Length: 469
Figure 1: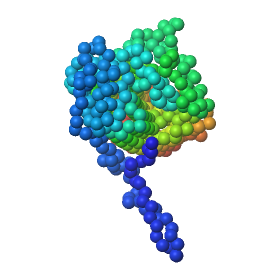
Figure 2 (figure 1 turned 90 degrees about the vertical axis):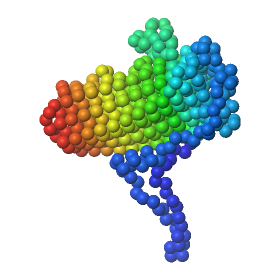
Figure 3 (figure 1 turned 60 degrees about the horizontal axis):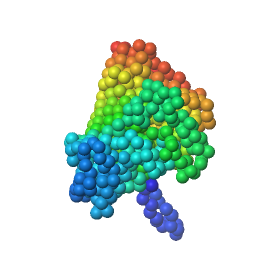
Figure 4 (figure 1 turned 135 degrees about the vertical axis):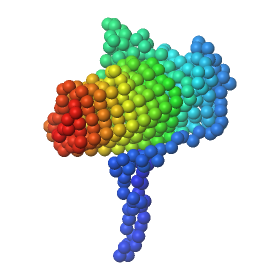
């Protein structure tokens, strides 16, 4: 899939110069920067075009009694609608038991108010394996609960509920943490995770990275892979096995008005990975891990694919519990650029850092042009802004990350141990960090600033006093 930027495409012309034809490259206008670019990104994103045709799952034998396996009936409805040119596949009120669902082009899976799709906790319901990405490394593994690969115009909409049924008995114990139900002698992901990462570093062909069946690598809830024109709107997501919404190598993605309430291990809310032109707006995140985590692949496998996440706008969201509010990394080897966050509220009793950027000298990656404004934070347990290049392996690698051009404007916080915690690496300093018109209250342990170049504080108030770098 071509994930080239949708903006600033070049037009190549030829003209006669001294009797020869030479190429002349013309730009209609120079690329926009700063918040002007944000407006252009939003203007370029559009919802998928879904035909106005409804297909009901009950017409294909689905029974919403919470006991009948409706997987085949749902899939027949999806396939029939797709073969007829597409449309809405409608799920009426009821309790619908399903295994993996595979969406196709021009399909909107639409859940009416009062509809709950309740997903099986039997791993066999998510076989055969499909191409997926797990913590930034490609493999063949369990199908996500809802999956689409290489499709155009795909959507999940409505006021219904998607329930993954994960808990301390099903899926979550595989993380190997006693907190989530694991006990000695039970299966866990430690060996499979190490095996997958070793395969990625050794550049083993992806088709030979076979997991599933006896694997303990939990599937994400929703994953659209190499898709274009994606919409997830209105639904509520509960009890995910792993990451909740995970678009990978997608272009033109909208996540709007979604409520995510899932407190298990690695229950990130929305993780766009190596995606271009993404709008996340009017969502509520209450998660067991990062609320939003922008990613682009892990280590050698991320560099092999080499596609950044870029042109991402996050606005008007409510972020509650989680490790981080807005996180970039740590699987970020493909880089990230042009991220805009505005008009968000963070109102949690248990939120780590508000804005968190994390990488190391094994991940690498260039992380740049990240802009935040008008964000109100109740309290965090660490820092308002954290940039950590010492994450996990720290400086123990040859791929020095680059972090530059990060701005926070009109950000307020009610309480935090640290105002900012900025830690670059020797030879990989964080640079060009700007805080402007920010007011951080009840900062109990001050700021941490190490290996940082060009830190600017313009009208920054901490504990009632104006501060300078």
